[in-house]
Image (cartoon, rainbow, N blue to C red; front, side, top):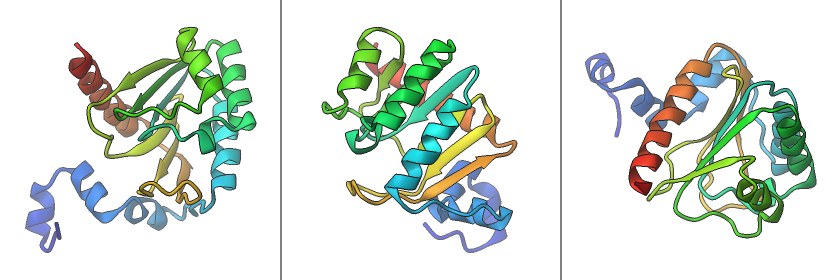
Length: 174
């Protein structure tokens, strides 16, 4: 869907425009440089989780074990649990069964998992309502990731997105 005129843009909700134009259209003008590798994503995600004091909210398609079974990520999540950080995850109908350690934390009720009937339209983390990671669409690619980490006043927008997906997941599981 191309947004050709200012009138069309004004009638289109912000989140739809964001999705149609790509996240780069929001973050690049702010001078935020993208990450472009799985290794960088893991390192920066672990740092982001390490900084959490209150909450971690994450939306992913299936929580790829390529990332979420990584020892650095698991250590960061376990350390966050020790700090009593509330963790909520949302994914589509399929959760990667190779996430052995993450599954243990979910079964022990240390992390809440909610599933949607369809894959979520966005992939992002919000930590303490202030630190955000958003990924560009990558499909099934295990070895490719591109996105942005940012600590600005976008937290409320992302918490709003998370809560909308959470309400949908809870409604679908009822």
